Length: 229
Image (tube, rainbow, N blue to C red; front, side):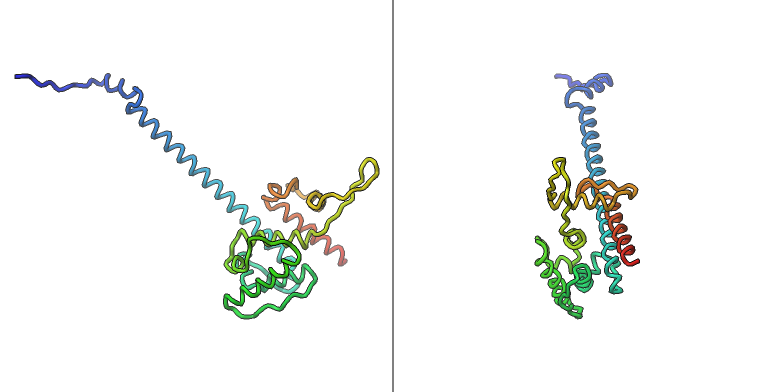
């Protein structure tokens, strides 16, 4: 009759096994590393989302202020940029004021079809002035944040800062017209010069804080006030 012996694993043997390739300690460390990577990824994703939301909030606030600087002439006001343009009336009025042209009268109905009709009138007018892509009346009526901000920025570029031509004297005393983009950038730099924290170098990162837009709005208000006095 054979005797059966149970294998006894000493604590020293168990400890040694933990540090062997594929051992328990290695697996635990691997899981910890995976958890840490996931935590870092979640943190970065949250940080990016927070920055995007902050940028959206700044742009929304700045563009709202810009619109109201014109709409006050018609005793109108935008409180929420993403909802107050839905019926198309304030957008039509803004375009009338900033362009100096008479646009079609808005439909006073409150149904969705009436709102879409009004916004389409604004977009039809804009199509005669600028190239619009990937935006429809439904986007404005439904309050699409990204497309609404893009539309207002297009209006600013076309009507607030339009047809800028700056002659630059070269060393040979010849004069050349800068490209529209370079001229616009130079114009923005001149208008915002002297405002604390504003350093316009491009049309992307330099505007993210919202200070550049605020400086432009303030400079335009100052010029309009000076012209009336």
